[in-house]
Image 1 (tube, rainbow, N blue to C red):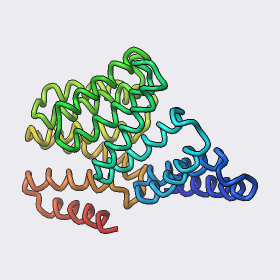
Image 2 (image 1 turned 135 degrees about the vertical axis):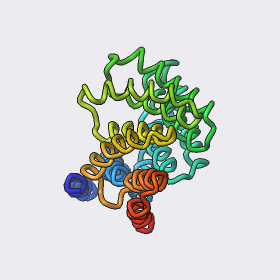
Image 3 (image 1 turned 90 degrees about the vertical axis):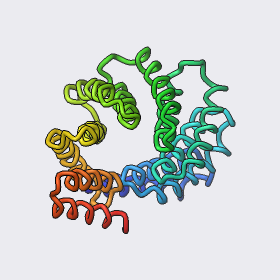
Length: 271
């Protein structure tokens, strides 16, 4: 996508200037590495993102005291990448490092904890430890509900995450109730379209598991449209929705369509 290329070009130019003009442990270099890592993370190129996050962390550790919030932020970046890569042991280790710093730096209930709790929730959801996942997402929700207006996009993300765990636990009624809360915000307030796409996909999965394939397809198509517009062609999040659509078409015995989406998912997986 052009947006990612432009962002990388800008950040890499900025990095070159900083590498020439600043000492090798200057915090501004850490910022550049973090920015570039963030773009690669958004592109789904998690190994490259980690390379830059490592460089950021190396400088941040030298430049800042061990309980500085920026250091916790660096560990959260690692956790996000490792979770997406399926390395949950590394993700949990990074989250513990972030949480330790936050506990020393902030009072209980500070907004900084919300991101950490949300990330813990995602990891435990992926590990199929649904009670733990729900506990962390609910802790996150409590913080956001106290700190933010009721239509804030962060609340929508959390509602969607909670809804997804209820789906995985087989409670479809609760799942849909939380997803509707999320969409009530995301469809009416300026949000990151990709977060809205995730909610559409989660709703689609819920209806697919309920065997309401027509409704499921409607939501999948909404999510797919956004992801195809906003993501690079080889992004792992596209593979996920192609895989889900293939399952739906297999269930409705539309095998040629199912194979089409399987093939698209496999092609991304091979890149």
